Image (tube, rainbow, N blue to C red; front, side, top):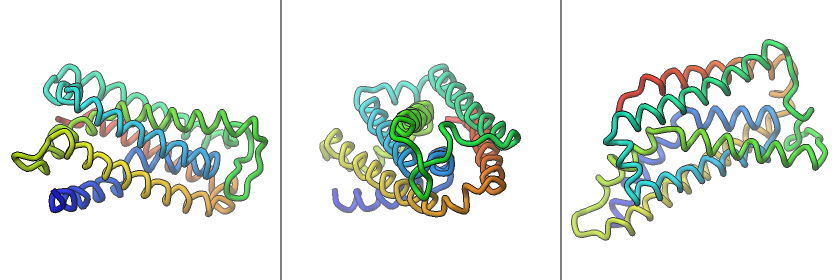
Length: 217
């Protein structure tokens, strides 16, 4: 069991640190609103992983992996969502619009308490929805994860341990990444830099959405 857990941790770590939609969303939240909303996005992503694990346990993820129609529906919804977020970032870059709610808190910004909480809630929802609409997570939990469960092992118990490892790695990596981006916020949120990063993040999100639209099971 321990050997399988270490092997899985290595695979999950590589998956976690690979640039993708999760890192793009955390970057967007950190630059637009600061450390708090970026961490909220991370929590939403991690909750999505937990829900995918539960879905896998009851067979829903296996259905997505086996059913071409179900996979296509989730894939198109996820791709559309990422493209929509990317287009919003690109529009903000082109118009030079400030982040919603004014200057961000966190690393150097100041915002009133009433304005911060809605942004955190919105960031949490974006992280959660983006993760839940990513069918590749379902495929990962139904095809890759079982390879680390040895014959005779209690499948459900081992699966839960592996999922906890994946969630902890994701939480640690994205939280550290969000902190680093937010710490650089004074420079990164200067108007000209922020517009350039909004454009880059928007382009990345659109690109990831298009890529997801063409991904195969």
